[in-house]
Length: 345
Image (cartoon, rainbow, N blue to C red; front, top):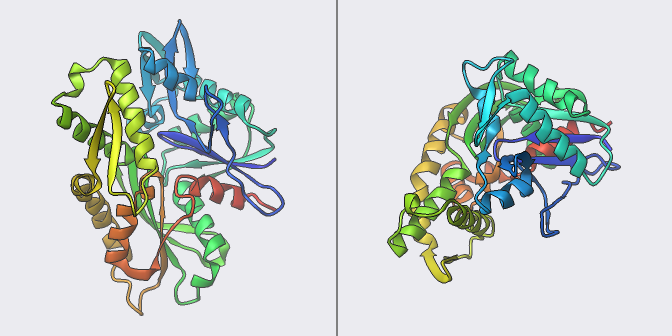
């Protein structure tokens, strides 16, 4: 099966090409649960590197964990021989990436054929080279590398083709990922989206939302992060992450367990804490799309990325830009689906 692979900062998402549809493939966790992603996490457990859900479970048992390790690819002094530290072990970065991707390959529910992979817009050559080298070392047959905004635009045009006209040929992509926010403007004429401009805010994403909820919970029990054992903190972060993923516009409170006691956080309090971060993202989008009046050349704004799952994000975006805002039905998987669409013959 041809695949689109979004090798993301906090999770890797894979979509397939299956007779004109593009399903998101699922990975099993340690308990047999199915997930539409594989966590971008590595841990050092019993002297060996483990990845994904196995790494998360090792972290809950106290093993040293390295999250979001693809962020190291954004280091301005990145070199072919750059390394990463996992606990007490120093590993060549390209070897770490390849080992992780090999684990992804081994856990896929299908045999991979040709693959399209994503890279950030305007990624430097070193990053592109290391990414491709890691995929090839993991025995993936990479036939295309596509920048993330263009992949998201492929997904948008597939769902909203009628919104595009000769006068309105541009697409805004609001990509709020796990660890980075990207605002992009693309021109979709000719069926091949081309990036016109991109603005990036590193270290701002859904990971921040997770941390904010953890801090609100700890404030209610009079504790702080530094006082918690690593395994306890890992468990609490996992609960908060799962709670945020379950939020709907009707949710009024969030309940998590701390040392056997249920702690409740009102959603309005969470929105008040997260709101300024979302507003910062919208402020980055503003110069790219301007005012979406009748003379605007922007056909629509696509909300993608794991952070765009939150109801607050789409509500604030629609208050600002109106009815041309479209949240992908699969915000966390939109880039992978777009990659799959791009290689669907």
